[in-house]
Amino acid sequence: MENLTSQKITEDLLPQEFGKQGKIWVAFLLVLCAIGAYAYYRQLSEGLVVTSMRDYASWGIYISNFVFFVAISLVGSLITAVLRLTNVHWSTPLTRIAEIIAVSAITFASLIIIVDMGRPERFYNLFLHGRLQSPIIWDVIVITTYFFISILLLYFPLLPDFQILLRFKEKTGKSLNKLYSFLGSFWKNTPAQIKISDKAINILSITIIPVAFSIHTVTSWLFATTYRPGWDSTNFGAYFISGAFLVGAGGVIVAMYIFRTHYKLEKYITNEHFDKMGKILVLLALLYLYFNVNEFLVPAFKMKKSEEEHLVGLFTGEFAPVFWFAITTAMIIPILILLFKKGRKPLPAFIAGILVVVGSWFKRYLIVTPTLLHPFLPMHDVPQNYMHYFPSWEEWAIAIGSLAGALLVITFFARIFPIIPIHETIIENEQHEKA
Image (cartoon, rainbow, N blue to C red; front, side, top):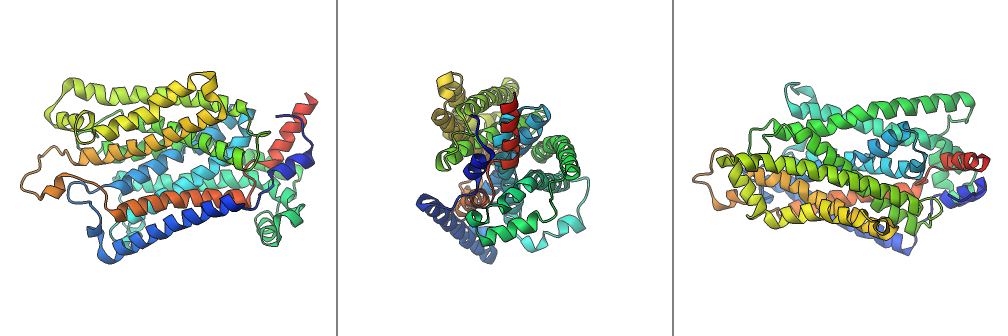
């Protein structure tokens, strides 16, 4: 980052009002959310019969969405915790982007689980009558813990920025100024407060790493402890974590490019950031590809009858187009793009990130659906539609609406708060000038 004055950095990083494109984007997301809300109303009034889920495919696109949201939320611990603790300063402009993705994703992961319940009014029973022997309760506990740690990791670094924002009342507006005053009223930027805040952030950064690993491991156990072909694997914990790191890093690269382009942040999110994140993404794609080879090669070598039907369905059967699309877009093409320096420029890195995110969503769909349609006990004397699963329009609308909702949270956050930490950027710029 070039040498800039504190005044210039602050003015560049202040939240900006939506332009014409921003208003169109918000309207588009609101329409998708409204359609999803109507579809959910139909599901509540008519019951789960409006979905295509039946006795066998009892987990459908909702659980695929849940696993996707949980996966992409891991980016908060990757960027904020791991890179912060290893004293990697170049990641400073990316920390808040990563944290808001994590918070919005884990919020909608929780909501989509409620949607998946046919009787959401019974949700409280999870807490009143939950059994610790159940991996579902483990998931509830660890998701709740991860959510609150992520909120705190998002909030604490914002405190010094609130004081800066309050000095620019004429640019931020009265309503936002009241919000900043409320959220940061106790912050005086004293040495004692700064020391406590830094210590708290370090503690949270250390804490969130095992919690993040736990949330993805426990989510994988929801599948691995269920005795079904395709899920009966001891590889699932590492398989899920590596995939989560991949999609999280891909999501950050996509957000980096969009914010850099629309908010003119080229001085802060530089080509070097894309180069380094591109290298990280290549490493994670290779790691996830390795676990995919492990996941399919061993059962393919043994080729037990139950596993055979599942693998044939993935590799050459009805799920083959989606399977090869997911593998190609989530791993192979991004590796080929990002291996070369030219591929780690902003635009090609953005394309690679998009491919990773899209391919990873379909990969989660493949983790859930094919296995349910190939149980150990073969299907006999059931209606034909029990043997296949394709989401109904209500399921698609709710799933797309939840994705739009997560994007809407990120969009409004960028409108209300600085998407790049102002205080930390000023400090780093001063340290760079002294050096």
